[in-house]
Structure formats: C-alpha cells, structure tokens
Image (cartoon, rainbow, N blue to C red):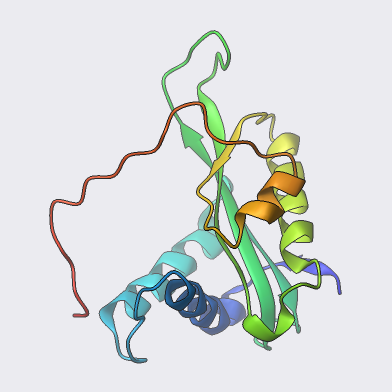
Length: 161
C-alpha cells in the first residue's frame, strides 16, 4: 500500500487515529464531542492547508476513506550551535497504526518517508518521543536513546471539557 500526503478530507480519520493512540497510551479519549477533538480538527486544518514546514503521511484508502496508519513531521527551531549552525531540527509525532493493521510495516515505511522528507529540507537531526510499543520501530530505523533525557512540567491538569 502506497503512502500519500494527508488532505483535509482525511481529518476525521486523523482524529480517530489520534484517539486510538491516546487509548493505547492509557488515556481515555472520551466521546466524539470532546473538546480536544474539535481542537485537533482545527489543528490539522491549519497545518494541512498552509504549512510548508510540516507534513502528514498516511497509509490506507484515498482521501476521506479509512486510514490504516499515519505519522507527521515538522521543523523545529532552536538556538544555533556547532553541530547545527542553523538550529533547525526535525520532529516526528503522531505515529499510530490502527490495531488491525499492526505488524504490516506501515509505521516503518512512514518513519522512513518522514526522515527522507526532513532530509530533503536539509535537516539531519530528528527527534521523537517513543512509546514502549513504538520504540522497536524507531530503533530499527536507526534512532537511539536521546543524548539528554526528556523532562515534562504540567502546570495545569486539563480534563475532558
């Protein structure tokens, strides 16, 4: 199955797959009327329609049809340094394969294509956060444990609103 770039017709499926990922990570995604789903639709609309430094790839049916897997990448901007004079890095996020389609190589093909897309933009340093189930896919693609450990701070607990 070929990969393609997501379109606005894919947004409902992208939000559905986001809910699959959240559930797999132990977060209850709630019902179809949850605030985060409306925010996610807007987030995808803004990026699909007008961001050249962002891409989203999908595997599955044509635009508006059922998707099997997705992943996205974008440029991030950091202070320049000796290893990256322009400060640009790539970030891969939103990697998810629908449960019935797992183990078929969709995630690996998406990761490889996203890395190639970032490379075509001159980005040679790519970061991501890996779930335990995703880590083997990323390791097989050449990713290693980060040089510096990630830390998080959440100043407000946001519930299902």
